[in-house]
Image 1 (tube, rainbow, N blue to C red):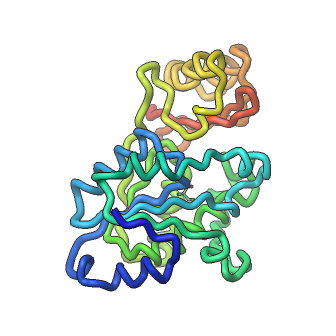
Image 2: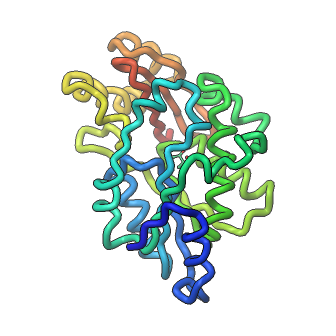
Length: 252
Ligand code: PAF
């Protein structure tokens, strides 16, 4: 597995014989990898000749500076988890990713303003901009995104369609713990007690008859609820517990 900290180094490899005529699968991440990411990598491995992983904690998608600061950075463990599934890892610096200082950006003007976007202003500008940059760098045939970030997935699909990007977006089912909690890098910040309580979140999302009753029940159970809403046959929610924000969704 080759780890590239310089984009020039990666680009040279991407143009070289190891990639000539091979299908390429790409998994973009912010690191703090867990079994959910491993499932994306395994899927990319099964579908493609070459698998590329990016690890970049993207500052432009954090509207809360504390959240950015506290985001776990675990490169050594991430590389161990990726071993055997990945050919190349891109670990660029902020300076290399944003030579323009984020003056150029991708904005979606409708769906990105709802749900997550309503609670995290500017979040999806950061996500879409970095995903476009990463897709241009990876030049992959397929890119893999988890369904846990359902709104992100739909917006990335929309961007690929709107901008005629030559890549197939492959949605992958949410990986869950035994008690149903969706795997997330944020889970490791929960206290033991909060981690146990957090399992109620997907249970209530699934079992409540309506979005409003789900929100009410979540509040009753002591969660701060940002929203519960339904779109396209999916019920989505965002809650905070110990000031850690969790999102999830279930099919209706
Ligand atoms: O889902 C994530 O981890 C991030 O939003 C992504 C797609 C890697 C962009 O930074």
